Image 1 (cartoon, rainbow, N blue to C red):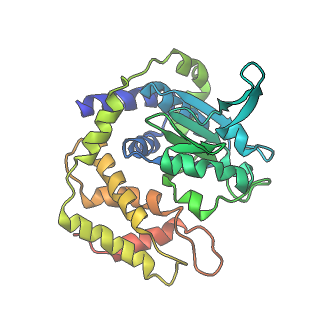
Image 2: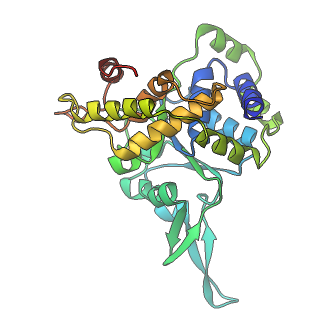
Image 3: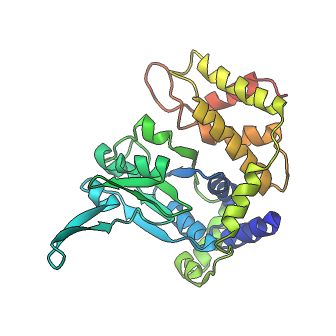
Length: 305
């Protein structure tokens, strides 16, 4: 049953987002693994469309938050307004109270506003006026981020980056996909006509199936060796945390499920490793984000089980 749902969902998504099957699979992997997704790329390559597509196909309640330099935490969480009829303050929920949140251009907001997402992403709850309010289930954040060298961006703190299970990049489409995009119908109109592929109960079933995917002890040894390699590298300012290790296993399980298997292979770990580790590691000395070639060297240095 999971294979049928996944195939139908990917087929429908690939009809709207052209030439990005791998990115779609990684995005779906993140949601099936119960994680939050960070998409970093240039404007105009389909980051926002991807979030809309996933929300529509999965039948999730969707809210988009455009992050700007003047956005306030209350614009995300909500605000209490005095009600004259009841002579009391009434809380008006913000857009964070949805199943899938698109935090568009999240690094254009100030660090104070960015941090408003921290509790929501980690605890699936928010605190307002001293009250703790639960968020809907399931709850996902897909954040888009422009390159840090663009004007008007505020780098995400490491504590917030660590809340994202995967980071992906879309890049430019290949020539054939771009030509089909230029000659085809507007993507937004296609999306408006698209009906949900999953029923409300299908996503929890996929998530439970992913948690049941077998991970051998030898594969756990391999993951630990990868973690140790990052911690002992003189090239990096710090290594991956146990939370990153748990995320790596969860993502590998979800990737294996999407690939139609009930067990994780070392190749699954290698596939998701750059997307789990890339935004969590920094180069020693200048603190820049670790380049892809450094992640490749780590993978090549650790023997396969």
